[in-house]
Image (cartoon, rainbow, N blue to C red):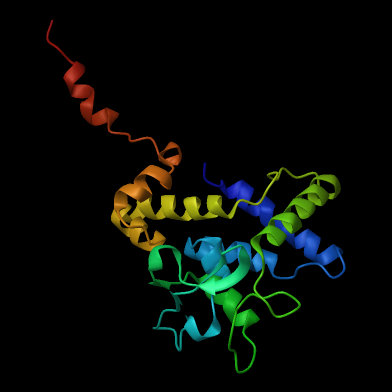
Length: 213
Protein backbone atom coordinates (compact mmCIF):
# COMPACT_ATOMS: atom_id res chain seq x y z
CA UNK A 1 0.00 0.00 0.00
CA UNK A 2 0.98 3.63 -0.54
CA UNK A 3 0.68 6.44 1.96
CA UNK A 4 -2.56 8.41 1.72
CA UNK A 5 -2.43 12.21 1.90
CA UNK A 6 -3.84 12.01 5.43
CA UNK A 7 -1.18 9.52 6.51
CA UNK A 8 1.59 11.71 5.11
CA UNK A 9 0.29 14.74 6.99
CA UNK A 10 -0.15 12.78 10.23
CA UNK A 11 3.37 11.38 9.99
CA UNK A 12 4.76 14.88 9.50
CA UNK A 13 2.74 16.17 12.46
CA UNK A 14 3.98 13.35 14.69
CA UNK A 15 7.64 13.79 13.77
CA UNK A 16 7.42 17.57 14.17
CA UNK A 17 5.75 17.17 17.58
CA UNK A 18 8.57 14.86 18.68
CA UNK A 19 11.30 17.22 17.51
CA UNK A 20 9.70 20.20 19.24
CA UNK A 21 9.01 18.51 22.56
CA UNK A 22 11.76 15.97 23.20
CA UNK A 23 15.15 17.38 24.29
CA UNK A 24 18.13 16.23 22.23
CA UNK A 25 15.85 14.48 19.75
CA UNK A 26 16.86 13.66 16.20
CA UNK A 27 16.30 16.95 14.34
CA UNK A 28 16.83 15.39 10.91
CA UNK A 29 14.15 12.73 10.81
CA UNK A 30 11.36 14.88 9.36
CA UNK A 31 13.61 16.20 6.59
CA UNK A 32 14.79 12.65 5.84
CA UNK A 33 11.19 11.51 5.55
CA UNK A 34 10.29 14.44 3.31
CA UNK A 35 13.35 13.86 1.12
CA UNK A 36 12.24 10.28 0.59
CA UNK A 37 8.96 11.71 -0.73
CA UNK A 38 10.78 14.32 -2.84
CA UNK A 39 12.86 11.70 -4.65
CA UNK A 40 11.39 8.21 -4.29
CA UNK A 41 14.89 7.03 -3.45
CA UNK A 42 15.78 4.10 -1.25
CA UNK A 43 16.46 5.22 2.32
CA UNK A 44 20.08 4.11 1.86
CA UNK A 45 20.36 6.59 -1.03
CA UNK A 46 18.74 9.44 0.88
CA UNK A 47 21.18 8.89 3.75
CA UNK A 48 24.07 8.77 1.26
CA UNK A 49 23.31 12.15 -0.33
CA UNK A 50 26.26 14.56 -0.24
CA UNK A 51 26.41 18.30 -0.81
CA UNK A 52 28.79 17.72 -3.70
CA UNK A 53 25.93 15.97 -5.50
CA UNK A 54 23.29 18.61 -4.72
CA UNK A 55 22.68 21.22 -7.41
CA UNK A 56 20.32 23.95 -6.26
CA UNK A 57 18.71 26.23 -8.85
CA UNK A 58 20.75 29.32 -9.66
CA UNK A 59 17.74 31.31 -10.84
CA UNK A 60 13.98 31.13 -11.43
CA UNK A 61 14.46 29.49 -14.84
CA UNK A 62 16.68 26.64 -13.63
CA UNK A 63 15.78 23.39 -11.89
CA UNK A 64 17.31 21.95 -8.77
CA UNK A 65 18.53 18.39 -9.00
CA UNK A 66 20.52 15.78 -7.14
CA UNK A 67 22.95 13.15 -8.39
CA UNK A 68 22.27 9.89 -6.57
CA UNK A 69 25.50 7.93 -6.68
CA UNK A 70 26.17 6.92 -3.06
CA UNK A 71 24.31 4.91 -0.44
CA UNK A 72 24.72 4.00 3.23
CA UNK A 73 25.00 0.21 3.35
CA UNK A 74 25.76 -2.82 5.50
CA UNK A 75 28.66 -4.85 4.12
CA UNK A 76 30.47 -7.81 5.63
CA UNK A 77 28.53 -7.24 8.87
CA UNK A 78 29.78 -3.64 8.99
CA UNK A 79 27.07 -1.01 9.17
CA UNK A 80 27.03 2.54 7.84
CA UNK A 81 29.43 1.84 5.00
CA UNK A 82 29.37 4.36 2.15
CA UNK A 83 29.11 2.57 -1.18
CA UNK A 84 27.29 2.47 -4.48
CA UNK A 85 23.50 2.27 -4.79
CA UNK A 86 21.82 -1.07 -5.41
CA UNK A 87 22.96 -2.57 -8.68
CA UNK A 88 25.55 0.17 -9.08
CA UNK A 89 22.90 2.35 -10.73
CA UNK A 90 23.34 6.11 -10.40
CA UNK A 91 20.70 8.64 -11.42
CA UNK A 92 20.13 12.36 -11.71
CA UNK A 93 16.77 13.51 -10.36
CA UNK A 94 15.15 16.91 -10.50
CA UNK A 95 13.64 18.03 -7.20
CA UNK A 96 10.19 19.36 -6.39
CA UNK A 97 10.11 22.74 -4.67
CA UNK A 98 9.61 21.30 -1.19
CA UNK A 99 12.75 19.19 -1.64
CA UNK A 100 14.70 22.27 -2.75
CA UNK A 101 13.49 24.20 0.30
CA UNK A 102 14.68 21.44 2.63
CA UNK A 103 18.17 21.57 1.15
CA UNK A 104 18.33 25.37 1.12
CA UNK A 105 17.40 25.45 4.80
CA UNK A 106 19.92 22.77 5.77
CA UNK A 107 22.81 23.92 3.59
CA UNK A 108 25.74 25.27 5.64
CA UNK A 109 28.46 27.56 4.35
CA UNK A 110 31.13 25.73 2.36
CA UNK A 111 28.90 22.66 2.37
CA UNK A 112 30.69 19.35 1.87
CA UNK A 113 30.05 15.77 2.90
CA UNK A 114 26.79 14.17 3.95
CA UNK A 115 23.56 16.13 3.89
CA UNK A 116 22.18 14.10 6.82
CA UNK A 117 24.43 12.96 9.66
CA UNK A 118 24.19 12.16 13.36
CA UNK A 119 25.69 14.05 16.29
CA UNK A 120 29.01 12.30 15.77
CA UNK A 121 29.13 13.42 12.13
CA UNK A 122 28.54 9.89 10.86
CA UNK A 123 25.79 8.50 8.62
CA UNK A 124 22.53 7.63 10.31
CA UNK A 125 21.82 3.98 10.91
CA UNK A 126 18.39 3.29 9.48
CA UNK A 127 17.45 1.25 12.55
CA UNK A 128 17.93 4.30 14.72
CA UNK A 129 15.50 6.20 12.48
CA UNK A 130 12.93 3.43 12.83
CA UNK A 131 13.31 3.50 16.60
CA UNK A 132 12.94 7.28 16.76
CA UNK A 133 9.84 7.18 14.58
CA UNK A 134 8.20 4.47 16.68
CA UNK A 135 8.68 6.57 19.83
CA UNK A 136 7.47 9.70 18.02
CA UNK A 137 4.34 7.91 16.80
CA UNK A 138 3.58 6.50 20.22
CA UNK A 139 3.82 9.96 21.75
CA UNK A 140 1.69 11.50 18.99
CA UNK A 141 -1.07 8.97 19.60
CA UNK A 142 -1.00 9.83 23.30
CA UNK A 143 -0.57 13.62 23.05
CA UNK A 144 -2.41 14.44 19.83
CA UNK A 145 -4.77 11.53 19.33
CA UNK A 146 -3.86 11.17 15.67
CA UNK A 147 -3.76 8.01 13.59
CA UNK A 148 -0.18 7.11 12.65
CA UNK A 149 1.36 3.78 11.58
CA UNK A 150 3.21 1.51 13.96
CA UNK A 151 6.42 1.96 11.99
CA UNK A 152 7.85 4.50 9.58
CA UNK A 153 8.36 2.37 6.49
CA UNK A 154 10.54 4.33 4.11
CA UNK A 155 9.86 1.65 1.51
CA UNK A 156 6.21 2.77 1.55
CA UNK A 157 7.35 6.32 0.77
CA UNK A 158 9.25 4.98 -2.22
CA UNK A 159 6.22 3.00 -3.40
CA UNK A 160 4.01 6.08 -2.97
CA UNK A 161 6.28 8.22 -5.13
CA UNK A 162 6.79 5.65 -7.87
CA UNK A 163 3.06 4.88 -8.02
CA UNK A 164 2.34 8.59 -8.47
CA UNK A 165 4.91 8.89 -11.26
CA UNK A 166 3.57 5.76 -12.96
CA UNK A 167 0.05 7.19 -12.89
CA UNK A 168 1.02 10.61 -14.24
CA UNK A 169 4.03 9.92 -16.48
CA UNK A 170 3.93 6.20 -17.21
CA UNK A 171 5.67 3.08 -15.95
CA UNK A 172 8.88 3.77 -17.92
CA UNK A 173 9.36 7.09 -16.12
CA UNK A 174 8.65 5.50 -12.75
CA UNK A 175 11.21 2.78 -13.47
CA UNK A 176 13.89 5.35 -14.29
CA UNK A 177 13.10 7.36 -11.15
CA UNK A 178 13.38 4.20 -9.08
CA UNK A 179 16.60 3.04 -10.72
CA UNK A 180 15.12 -0.34 -11.61
CA UNK A 181 16.54 -2.76 -14.14
CA UNK A 182 13.25 -3.04 -16.04
CA UNK A 183 9.81 -1.40 -15.94
CA UNK A 184 8.37 -4.80 -15.02
CA UNK A 185 10.17 -4.63 -11.65
CA UNK A 186 8.47 -1.31 -10.98
CA UNK A 187 5.10 -2.59 -12.16
CA UNK A 188 5.25 -5.73 -10.03
CA UNK A 189 6.58 -4.31 -6.78
CA UNK A 190 6.03 -0.54 -6.69
CA UNK A 191 2.95 0.46 -8.67
CA UNK A 192 0.08 0.48 -6.23
CA UNK A 193 -2.72 0.03 -8.72
CA UNK A 194 -5.26 -0.33 -5.92
CA UNK A 195 -4.87 3.44 -5.56
CA UNK A 196 -5.46 4.06 -9.26
CA UNK A 197 -8.55 6.08 -10.17
CA UNK A 198 -11.57 4.25 -11.56
CA UNK A 199 -11.52 4.43 -15.36
CA UNK A 200 -14.78 6.05 -16.35
CA UNK A 201 -15.89 5.68 -19.98
CA UNK A 202 -19.33 4.31 -19.12
CA UNK A 203 -21.22 7.10 -20.88
CA UNK A 204 -19.41 6.37 -24.13
CA UNK A 205 -20.48 2.74 -23.94
CA UNK A 206 -24.11 3.41 -23.06
CA UNK A 207 -25.09 3.43 -26.74
CA UNK A 208 -24.43 -0.30 -26.99
CA UNK A 209 -27.25 -0.97 -24.54
CA UNK A 210 -29.91 0.72 -26.72
CA UNK A 211 -31.38 -2.01 -28.85
CA UNK A 212 -34.44 -1.59 -31.07
CA UNK A 213 -37.37 -3.57 -29.77
